[in-house]
Length: 444
Ligand SMILES: Cc1cc2nc3c(=O)[nH]c(=O)nc-3n(C[C@H](O)[C@H](O)[C@H](O)COP(=O)(O)OP(=O)(O)OC[C@H]3O[C@@H](n4cnc5c(N)ncnc54)[C@H](O)[C@@H]3O)c2cc1C
Image 1: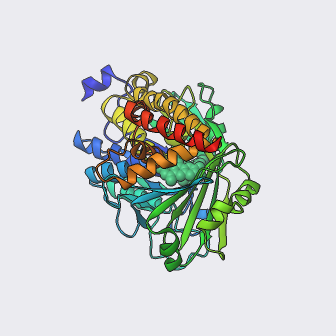
Image 2 (image 1 turned 180 degrees about the vertical axis):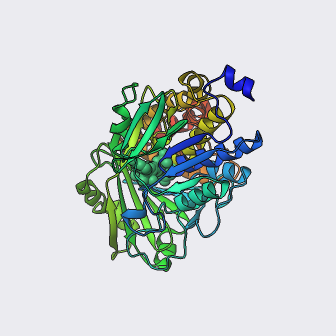
Image 3 (image 1 turned 120 degrees about the vertical axis):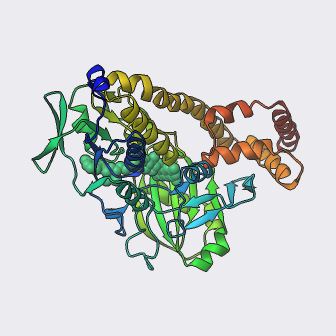
């Protein structure tokens, strides 16, 4: 081991100290995998997760604001890793999406006919939630990291500097210590971005937009009656709203809106839309609202010697499956740090290919969302698309090409690149063209 250390001064060794800034999913995934991998090579790491939020609290204090949809892919990948989401974490199993437009609605069932998507809360739930018998997703993962041997310190890191070529962390103006490696997993809703920009190694805040979340309080029976086990998705011609989703959970439905810098006023406009009114019962209460930031573009320089940015603070999937990206990137950072080393060169060679592959995949995502925008805004295209999906859903023997494309876009279940290539299917595009031709005769 001494020989490896001499050859690689940036190798972690038994007893190395790692600071994880942010105990959201990325920080916990990194810690779980780094602890496991180090044990595999007979080393013990000292990982400290700095996380000021208490995920056992209801309301904003314990919440990492998000829709809380765990994709099929992530549920399955975690199961393979031996991480099974317990019933106490899952609020509802989802087996279909219902798409609503001004031209009608259509249901798209999971291609596997199982309830494979899970909805969760990132904290305990909206302020004052009744029956706190459920555990939050973030608390579950943080506890797993602690079980693996990581230490959780409820501190907010407010300053970082380099001393003797090692990053030193501070909280409340007090020095904590120097670290062999610092992982920035503080997301995009954090002032820590500025702290790392100030270090001058080239890290800049990810490109962001503002999204909206509202928690709609309803009783369990109402949720079953109105929503069943479906996520309801809205593609409506409301200015600057790309799409909105209503995600059923225990006694709430989480409304998530994505678009161009969404405002509270736009949430009201959506709730007042006649298509949305048909989906919701007449009387409901909004118990919680927020306008969280969302990462829509990765920073170019996410690492330097002994510092690496990960998850939302680095590169994540566009609009969907940020939790899946947290898993991929957390594990990639852990693998690099434990098996290769923690220099800028190590991160460039072993971590950056994963980082870049998400950036490249998001280019395909941007194209697919641009196409969705065209369909959302054009009545004829939107109706034609709905008709094709409806026919596919009614025909048991159909290969359901468009339905599965839409399923994968909505659920974030598949790489955008793969969806893009499937969208070139000749058969599907001929079906769509035939439908558009039929409708244009009727429309004009
Ligand atoms: C409106 C919206 C809806 C979404 N819906 C979904 C969805 O349904 N499914 C999905 O997969 N993804 C969804 N996402 C994306 C998902 O929320 C993120 O990709 C995911 O939370 C990223 O995890 P993270 O650990 O990198 O960051 P975060 O979850 O943001 O965690 C960062 C943590 O760092 C802590 N922190 C911040 N600053 C400091 C500091 N200075 N010191 C110490 N700790 C600090 C914070 O308290 C927080 O706990 C959604 C995002 C938005 C905005």
